[in-house]
Length: 397
Image (cartoon, rainbow, N blue to C red; front, side, top):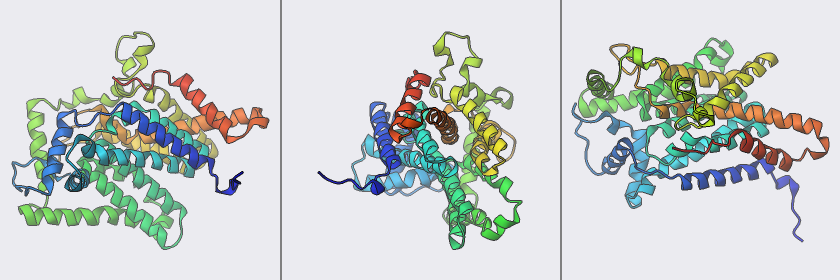
């Protein structure tokens, strides 16, 4: 018989691999590809990026400058055939990366069980599955926001020169999210509560600002040399959106109020039609069950007086406020058009909070059943919980 070294057997890693397999199978089953006007346009821009020079005039589509989204796909198109799967391979890989980061963040803050649950829950979020196989900025932004949070947490726990590097990576990740979708720069507000701490400044918190500002400066100098306009992409975006505002495609602010509350909780705004009335169009039961988990995590953190544990609820809150009340115009206050897929910036935070709740449930179970405290029981119990609580969660319209 072959002896198995238990020291080299990490049940959490094995379980995480199984979760990745489950996630891959689900995405294969619900594969989308280039099915919308936007993602097909991004596919065309990616294919032409390294083949046809950009015009660098005011008639160009500002989305052609979203290099964080387009450039990796353009490189893939240089070496692989320009087929639909290749077009969505980059966001697909980043969606797996988001899954890994959710596990790492959950494990770092709340323990490995919470990390495993968080990854498992994110695997079942319908919108994350749907857009994980589409060439759109949302999955890209979600990944880099997760990376920014992960790098920030590492900077908080490290000492020495590595701290500054982690802070730098955190700021640079926000820059990459910003380049994928311009309004993502609002996520810099995530760092607001931490800038009043002198100890963090001494550790290198300022590197977050440098990690964002230096690449922005380099990119905008590139725009200046190409177009003669330092703020070229912002002016392009403003011109494009002004047309949409004037045409009525982007409605007045009054109409756009609490738009994301509607997407989260559609059952509050429509006639109740049985259990199906609770299910959001593309989010299933994500927010119906996730927001209570968010509240539980917040209360638990406050009771423990551990402010570090509040980072995830803060991530959710600041992301929601940005989406709900952020402006897309640089000359007037104009709320952005509410699209449900924009909520992908906060679903990872929600998954982590769900992981905390399910982890505590299993903890209570194990305390009452001390003879069955093995990890297989905990994982099997988690599957049972999800089957009971998420019966319609995989329904994708």
